[in-house]
Each structure stands twice: as C-alpha cells, then as structure tokens.
Length: 166
Image (tube, rainbow, N blue to C red; front, side, top):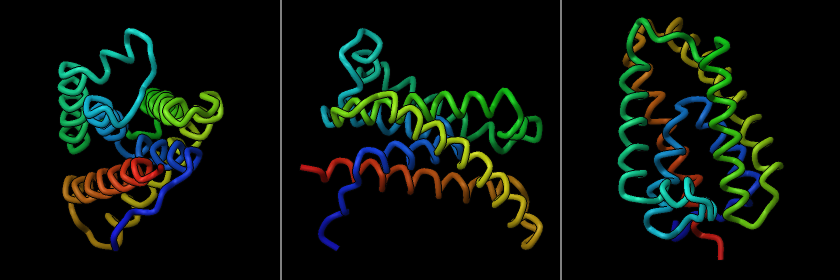
C-alpha cells in the first residue's frame, strides 16, 4: 500500500468526531501537531494561532495523556452521562468545524458532522466496552487501553487521509 486514500472533508469531520466520542482529546492533540507542522490550518484567530504553537501542542498532549489515564480510574463517570457527553459533542463539533475550515468548506456543516460523530462514538464505545467486558471478563483498564489504541489508530488514519489530498 503506497498511499492512504484521501478522505473528503465531511468524512474526516464525522470520523474525527467519532474519535472524540471515544477519547475527546486524541483528535485535538493530532490536529495541534499537524498545525504546528504547517499541514493543518485551524483558522486565523488568536486562539487558532496559539493552537499550533509549541505551547498549544504541549497543552493538547498533556490533556490527551490526562484523559487516557483518567479513563482507567473507577471514579471516572461514564462518557454518556450528561456532562461528559456534552463535552464530547462540543469537542467533536469543534474538530469537525476546524477540519472543514482547513478544507475551505462550511464550518457549520463540519461542526454538525463532528458532533454527530462524537455522539455515535460515545455510545458505540460504551456498548463495545460493555460487550467485550461481558464476553471476555477482561478488566476495565485493559479494555480501556485497547480502546485507546483504536481511537489513536483511527485518528491517525483519518488525519493522514486528509494530508494525502492534493
């Protein structure tokens, strides 16, 4: 396989939203890295410029690492409870809007697709984790680590699919 197929912006917005439903900070961290490398344009505003700065990338990576660790704790609320679910919808919408902005597409459509993807990802991740816990008897933290790998792998593939557009 020489090249990852290019994904259209609506698919990237929805899929990165889905990842945000699984692990909300993973797509944020990847897009921050791509912004710092000059391969992603988050926008022209002051906050967008800070997003792609060294400090912005570091902050996004710390937030991502914190989320990956916190997910394994027994006190962490389910992602489908109101607070965490709304946060995932907001993050998915923001990521989707940013992907659409980068492609010169309407931000509103990207936000809608990203939020819808995040909602789907949150519920799919919850159901998948319960299914595998019931079927395998594996401990929650191990299943969470497997879910981390799925989320990171999917996000990397989606971001790389966006980079191959020309």
